Amino acid sequence: MSEQFVTLARAYGARVEGPLLVSADGFSPRYDLDRTTGVVTRVGHSLYGHALAGSIVAFPTAKGGVAAGWAFLDLQSRGLGPLAFIFGITNSVMVHGAVMAGVPIADGLSADAWEQLRTAGWAELRPAERVLRLVR
Amino acid sequence: MKLSVHEQEMLAGRFGPGVQWALGYQVAVGEYFDAERLVPATNAHLVADMEVMGEAGLAFLGQLVEQGARVAIPTTLNAGFTDPAFAQVLHQDESLVARQVVMRERLQALGVLNVDTCINYQSVYQPHVGEHLAWGDTGAVCFANSVLGGRSNFEAGPAALAAGITGRVPAFGYHLDRHRRATTYVEVTTPLEDYADWGALGAWVGRRSPSYWDVPFFDGIGPSLTRSADQLKHLAAALASYGSIALFGARGVTPDWAAMNPDHARQQRTLTVGAKELDEVYASYGADLNTTDVDLVVFSGPQQSLYELARLAELLDGQHVHANTRLIVTTNHAYYQWAQQLGYIQTIEKAGGLVLTGVCFYLMTIDRLQREHGWHTVVTNSTKLANIVGAHPYRPILRRTRDCVAAAVAGRLVG
Image (cartoon, rainbow over all chains, first blue to last red; front, side):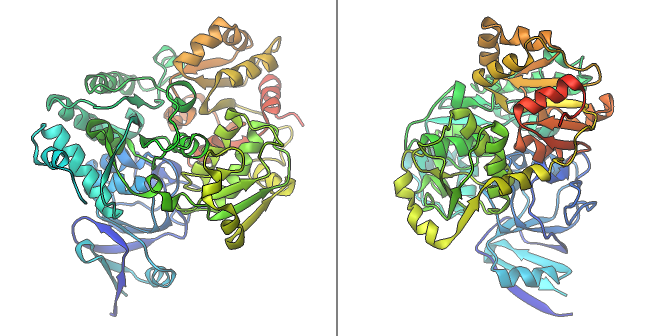
C-alpha cells in the first residue's frame, strides 16, 4: 500500500474516505444520470452502468444544467448519493447541490494530480485541510 | 466573507430561520469560491420541479413556508414537468402531477411568481448592463450575461431561492469583472440560418470548452449577419448545455464586448467554425439517416417564442401531422395567449400538433413517456434537447426547422 497527498484549491464538507470511482468524462445529473436509480446511463460515458452510491466519485469537469441543486438532495435522501464529489474543475451548480445535500465536494486539481487519481483505488477527502489522500 | 451588520443579523437568525438558512447557505457556497462579500441582487429565477427535487426538496419548501420565509426580490419560476391540461393525454404520473400542485402552492406561499418559463429573459424580465441576478436555467443565465450584460452565475434551485429570500448573491464568478474576459476566440466563417445552425455552433464550441470558466468570444456573427434574439437564445442554450458556459462574447452583440479583450483571447486560443464543423454536429445526430420513421418531433428546449410559434404555424398551415408521429411544441403561458390571439395555436393544433404551456420537453419525465408511448426516434431543431435526451432511451436526430416539420408531416425523415 502506498499513500499520496493531493492539494485541492477548494473544498467543503466533512472528512470522508472510501473507494474512488474516477471518470474520464464530465458529469451532470441531468445529462448523464438516471436519477431514479443513481446510475450513470448516458451511453458512451466512461462510468456508464456505475452507481454513484458508496464511492467518492471524481469527474474532470462539470457539465451544464442546474438539476444538481435539488437532485443531490433527492439522491442523498434515498441513499443513492456518493460519499463525496471530486471535480478537476467544477461549476457553481455542483457546489450548490453538494452543500444543500451535505455531500463533501472539492475541486481544483492540477493535471498531474488528476493523473494520480486515475490510478488510486481508495481516497480520503479532508476538506478542512483541502487535501485528498490517495491510497493504492 | 465580510458581512454587513444586517447580514450578520440575518445569519444570527434575527429575521427568522428561513432567512438564517438562506444566508448561511450562501455563505457556505461563497466561501467555497473565495467570495469576499455578498452583493445586492434585483431578480431571482428559480428551478423547482417535482421531476427533479423529489420528496426531500418538497419537504424543504414546506419547512420554509412553516418558518414564514418570503422572497425579498422578484423571484420567478422556471418551466416545469407538466402541463396539467395534457397530463392525462400524455399518461404522466398522476401522483407526481398532484405533488407538483402542492409544490407550486408552497412556492406561491414563499412569494415566488409561478410563471413556468425558461425564457424569462424574453418574456418576463430583461436585466440591464451590470445588474446582479440569481438565475437558474443555464441557457437563461448564458443569454442574460452575454446578450443583455447582466451578471449571474448558474444558480441551482436552492441557491436562487436563497438569493430570493436574502436579496443577495455571493460575489464570485460572473459577478466579477475578472471572470468576464474572453478565453477563446471563435471565428465563424459560415452563415447561420436556422435555429439548429446556431445551436450547432454552440454545441461544437461547447464540446471544446468544458470548463465553467471558459468564455468564448465570437467573431463573424456581428452586424453583417442576422442575429435575432431567438437565434442567440439557441446559441446560449447550446453553449451552456454542451460546455458549462455561462458567458460568451460577440462583437456587436454583447454590450460590453470590447472589455472582454477578444484580441488577447485570439492570441491564447482560436477556433474556426465553418460549414464542415457544423456538419460534424449534424453528423452526430443522424445526418446519415434519410427515410427513418419518426415517432416524435419536438420544438422545445428552450420554450418557443412568439416568433418561433409564428414560423411553425406558417410551415404547418394546411398540413397534417402523420398519424404515427406526435408533434410537440412547448411555450410559456404569455406567448400561448398571444399566439392564440394571432391564430398560430389554432393553425398548429389544426395540423395535429400539441402545444403545451409551462413545460420544457426534457423535464416531462421522458423515460416514463418513452415507456407509455413507445417513442424512440426524436427529431428536433434544438441541439440542447438532442443533448439531454441522449441520457434517456431516445435516439435524437437534429434537423433544421423546415425539415423537422416535413418529418412530422411525412412520419419519416425526408431527404
